[in-house]
Amino acid sequence: MRLKAVFFDAGNTLLCLDYAAIVNALKEEGFLVSREEVWQAECRARVRLDPFLAQVEVRESAEVFSRYMRHTWEELGIPWEEKAERALKRLWEINRRQNLWQGGVMPGASEVLAALGEKGVLMGVISNSDGRLETILNEAGLAGHFSVIADSRVVGIEKPDPRIFHWALERTGVLPEQAAYVGDFYSLDVVPARRLGLHAILLDPVGAWPPLDCVKAKDLFEVLSLLLLLR
Image 1 (cartoon, helix red, strand yellow):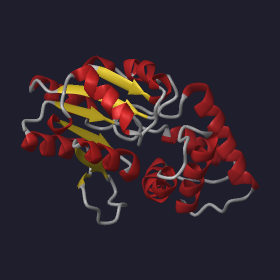
Image 2 (cartoon, helix red, strand yellow; image 1 turned 120 degrees about the vertical axis):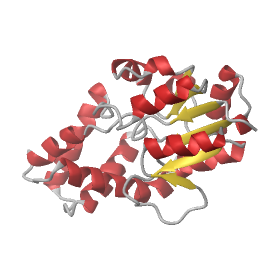
Image 3 (tube, helix red, strand yellow; image 1 turned 90 degrees about the vertical axis):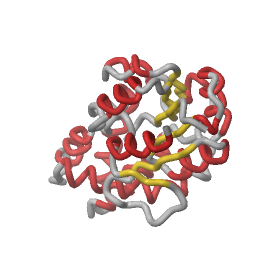
């Protein structure tokens, strides 16, 4: 059936993590790393975090954030000690105050969303977030592309619960088999989307994920090419 809609995750899919804030937090504790090193490490940390995300009940939490950053530190070769813990606490405070996923728009996001819009494809966002997602997307200049924005805090349901996908589908009037979902976690994004019958694409920018039973793309431009094949 012809593809009519595409839903995206937000963080690490449309919106960048604030890598500069991470670099600065680590620098203040004496750990000198580059933005590129942090990005590479964080991409690998996602893979390590994924099994934990599949098991916990609440994913927008200090516990999940702590584990995520601790995996990133380990991928950077930073030992878990008092200085590393202080850097993590500093980042959690930044995230609590202003949301750490405000490091800019992902490369290709504006161009890809515009291209899909020109094709008449409906678009939406389905993301585990903290209630500030629509504001962040507005500030990033992306919100106008979307027919629906499903922020888990606003909707009251977190991925991988299928109800948040149903919530978005109902508001666009699209059947699951007419839609695709793009995200950066296997258990939160690919698994629930496919169970409902959506096409699913996993973003894997550094080739960190092992072989999986799903379509992977290194960036949003490759995502666009894959989506156009579904059209």
